[in-house]
Image (cartoon, rainbow, N blue to C red):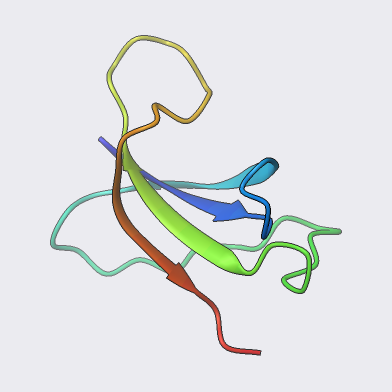
Length: 67
């Protein structure tokens, strides 16, 4: 499955925004207290069904939010 993340500029801290399906549009909710100025990078990862909530390390898309 695909999961959307926000990353800090150093790519050391990340926040999950949730799971998405390929080819579909979805609105994700920004968790309370998350500052987009601190997490300007959006990342989409491919996640295995292994029960591990961490980022798999396999990104299929990544971009920087415009301020």
